[in-house]
Length: 175
Image (cartoon, rainbow, N blue to C red; front, side):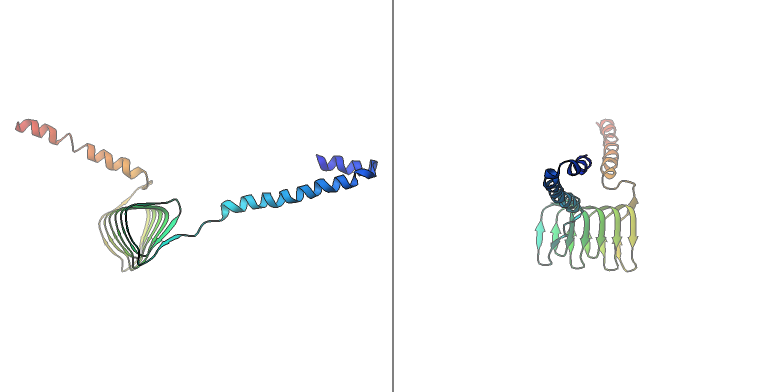
């Protein structure tokens, strides 16, 4: 709107010509600022790396990416979780994408789970998609779910509630 009126103004009043240049200069900084704002969300931070000599006791939770090369005794929740060949995880792993090159003792939940040839998993895997390379060592069960990250907890609670009432009548029969 301003550009149309300012185009007409210089023809009518030559004194306003410098004024027309000033708003154009003001628009120039706004354009790069607009370009900068969309660029900021696109920049993805690098994965957090837990080095080989690091031993963590406790749970880890992030919305970002983690690469584990050390030892973690606890649960890990992340967006992308990469378990290095030298890594050992003792606990539950929950992530959108899980790439296992090392050892996990515990349950694995992920939308995409990949066991490479060097993977060693002792525990159940609940997934939407899974890939197991030749040479991977896996002891446990594999279960496919459409929503393994959230739906599994509700489903796990329902079977636990069902067996509890069954022993109660048996106890009454004995007493």
